[in-house]
Image (cartoon, rainbow, N blue to C red; front, top):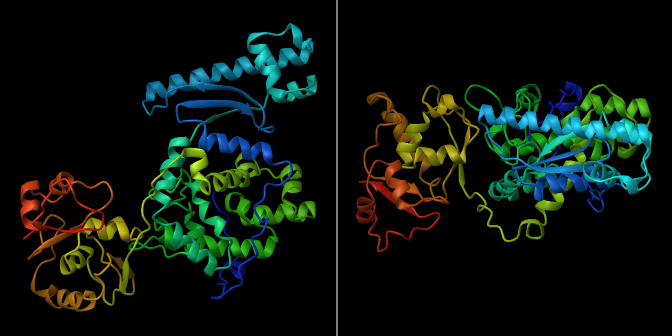
Length: 451
């Protein structure tokens, strides 16, 4: 999910690049749940693993152990349904508030309570008092479940997790942080926030320009692997200054300057002290809960069988790489190498829409990913394509290349879907590829889609 922007670091700090071979911080007990944070972590585990998108929890904003009600309410993007859902939620919040204020005014014998009153009273457990109820009346919050999004995110994460862990280790950052995108975006490659953050790591433009390449041809925020290095460097820099991984991770949401201000004002780098006592104007619910959300996501992501049963994450991305020595159109690359353009885009999500639509070229020096086995011949094939470029007009997306064209089978593909995508028929694909069984194709199989 999207969060507040990462605040721009001072150039004297953030332009420092950690050296290769940087010592990895010892990870033993680094991400144990701090004493006192258990209720918040348990709450977010319920959000991610128990409550579906069609369930809404009404809870106390500060004491996350207090959950008044979990309402079954169908999620919908339809405007009228959305407004009706909001109206129902607001009515329930008013009802809970009314009960809390009444409890605070009367402090009744709990044996006399029933129905909604009994439910609200029991949400606090023993030891509640009029002062607690009175404060809670203005502290009611609504949270919709994210179970489906979290499960889908774990499937997509399978493509990138191993690559991200390798980068984190290279930058001296604990490998557990590879699961931070589950909090930021649930590994939605196209995630964009209302304030301009983008990609699975949710970099804001200002911070992205420090750590990543961002221009009209390349925006590394949208590449989970490339953006991981920028996130690792940001977090390592923050840790070096703050002396605490919980604070460094919280700064990813609250901002570097905000966390440094909290450390200065309270004179401590103890996370729980800052969480309880810091009163900065921007240190609200999202910032206070960001680390608890991360710990909850980490626990679930590392134990998916416990929370979701058997899952089948997407296979890790496998690819060859080569450096583009001269500026060239993406579809010229696809045609020269006889690779499906969509597959190139899938492997190189940092290339912008302008490149995909042919308005700009893949820039010289760009390290392009190719399906396995394609990189060996790429330099000579692209050199030939560049040499002949002046002799022919640039092809559009719709124009087929000369000679055979091929497609690499992806998860979820069928012969029927491949045929529709490439303007051919199942019968032609069977004949072109000498297939014995039209219902049996395998991931990674290279199919001829045109002769």
